Image 1 (cartoon, protein in one colour):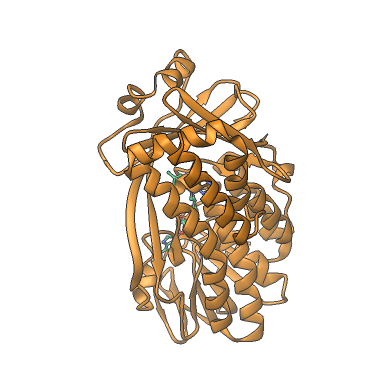
Image 2: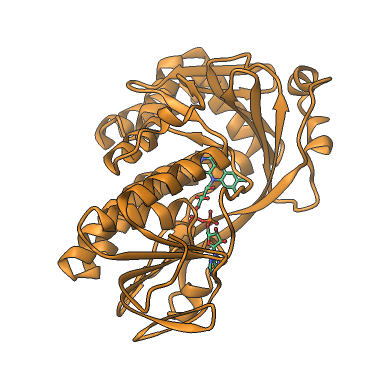
Length: 370
Ligand SMILES: Cc1cc2nc3c(=O)[nH]c(=O)nc-3n(C[C@H](O)[C@H](O)[C@H](O)COP(=O)(O)OP(=O)(O)OC[C@H]3O[C@@H](n4cnc5c(N)ncnc54)[C@H](O)[C@@H]3O)c2cc1C
């Protein structure tokens, strides 16, 4: 279906991962759903392409098994900081590296199966209490969902731009034709930047650079990362694709009959690898609120779901800003890998906050006694 009806229960603006998962979740609750996106699938985007085990699980609760689309599993995370490295497996489940275009096509197919009305190449130019202006005509809608990404015009139109927190970094991604040499997703820490490597197939890895310097490119940054540079040398690679990763927390994610989801509703820094997981989880919460007719429930759930990833993102960004603290913390965890394993368990929602506090104290002590 590639058309706009004259009216719908839920009009979703943006057919990226957030718009599609919100649409699938709303449709599963019996609502009539339309998605409009100015692009045509499969849509590509700069992304590290790693989904943590909690994200794989959250996608399953929306009715799709990401592993069926292909991709490449990874069993944990490795931090590398100069000569020091520490790795840990996820306590349960596996992460999945999956090409963005493959993920998008899978979600489009799932939305079609679910009976979502999809309008590609349709630009939305405004909203009103009655509905949405798409391709210059009004489509009446009871609910409007803004899933139009980090720059979200819907957020502005609805007057939801006010932030509790807002900072940005810049990401650049390339694919290298190279067999993954590790069962882990790797984060290589440098001074003021990180390179992370996600296996996305048996013969391809996704390499992302993230920094606060919008002029810094992968080739320049690789000068700092000798081991990574040697590993990638000679492998064919794709064009570099860039994007902005924001740490953004909004004061409110709904107003009247308009709700925001995905990066439009705020985001955590890309280095966490939690963007997709969050939008899958929040889509389920949004669908529940739409069904009940009470978007304040969504706002509360949105905040609850975001709390742990936001906290973990703050910790990782502290390691980005404070080199000596990072060297010490990673050395301490390399000496006692169990501390890192528990940190990772917290990251993917498999450790109770009280145990995390105890782990933090043990890490602090280990750092002091290095
Ligand atoms: C460098 C980088 C690396 C990342 N790495 C990871 C990672 O490893 N793991 C992870 O989980 N997350 C990662 N993320 C985060 C993740 O990519 C995002 O959270 C996710 O893409 C957000 O999806 P979205 O649907 O909200 O937005 P988008 O994917 O931006 O989709 C928005 C859609 O809205 C459409 N649109 C916009 N305006 C209009 C309009 N007026 N009318 C119609 N359509 C419109 C656009 O065409 C687009 O298709 C990374 C992000 C960056 C920048």
